[in-house]
Length: 187
Length: 369
Image 1 (cartoon, rainbow over the protein chains, first blue to last red):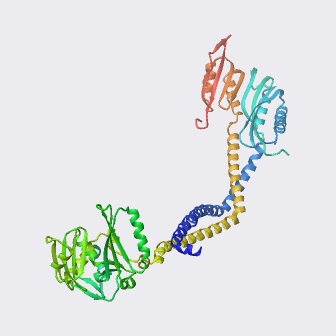
Image 2 (cartoon, rainbow over the protein chains, first blue to last red; image 1 turned 180 degrees about the horizontal axis):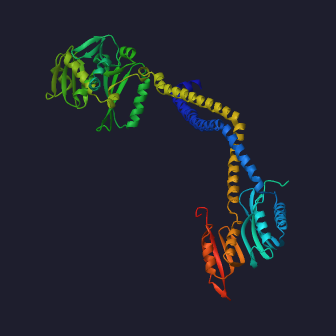
Image 3 (cartoon, each protein chain N blue to C red; image 1 turned 180 degrees about the vertical axis):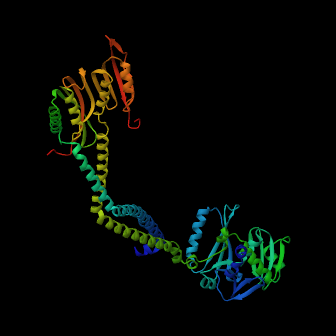
């Protein structure tokens, strides 16, 4: 066996070199290139992280500012996590405004619902009631000064005479728009 | 200029002179002035005729493959001396003529690591297939050389072979064969010129050597193992360097992971909140107040209109009712800055003495005001 190995030692040396190149050096070289690419990517990631950490204070300030803006907007929206809760709250508010303005409610009905954002829903409500000029003005003024906001999208006042006269009875129809904050829960 | 000179020198092969010598008892370098004694053992040695024997043998009816096998067997049997065999095809015998040159033991023992050239082979290359008879003054004495029809004969001037004519007669050269006499320096120059101009691709036919001794196999293996080991070391170092960098960066990144996640979630929350605030603001300001529209209606009543219906939205108002003069009401209303346009919607009808009409009023935008 030993003599055989000695006889073919030159061939064996050459084959060993080829095996080392093919099965050791080539994969090692590929590994080096792969690792280099990984290192480059990680370096970029590290640079980005360093950049992000350097603006950490700015991010905190911005977060506080945005949180305060969000909080300041909450009084203008109806806080209700569910549809039934919102409808109860909003309808109650509309009825109380109309009652305070001495208007006689004919009907109140929900017309449409559209989701503006994950937690922001726009609702349209149609209120039909009767009343004199004082009722009409008082109700419109009260709606437009409500918190949470109740906007008047469309309105219609009809009667034998629509004037400033307190004795004139009118049929009034308002399309009111309100916004539900679905993330919040009313207290 | 220096580079040009260098290139010219390389082309002229003058550098080869230092690696070539002639051997007879001593080594002689081939200078421009003739043979000059030298101590240095060069890589290529032209051997004087006295140190080798020449023999011719014909192998009839044999294929090239069989001949090669036969010559290999003969070569293996005579390991002690350096032997060189050249064969040429013999068409008449349907076989091969084999010329065997066997160097003596002195040469085989002392110069086995060198490339050996029999001097008669070199002379034969100079005169190719011409019929010639030469008298050459070599360091070993006067040498007669003759060649004709592919076969060469040579012997030193001694005994009965005392002149070129006798030599020619003895080897059967015709009278027409070219007769040349060369002195020592001319012979030296011819040897050098022939060797210099000999094509490198055919050098194996001219040169004989003991391959195992003349070539250092370890050095041969080193020619590829050395770069291989260097490349391996380089690749290992490169791998190590990148792996260290990789682990360092990984450590850095893992240290900051929680902080970064928090920061990224904050950034996401900021973006979400910003989008939410923008949406809510746009929604809340999308509808203008309508209470001011009642002021416009008041102006219409003042202008003498009895309104039966008043409806509208954020863009326009519709008024329906009676007036003594619809035109008076329209002209009074048109002057209001809150309106961008005012017009009758349909015909103005007479109801008794009064006008019955419908008006559409377009509200002015902030820019129009």
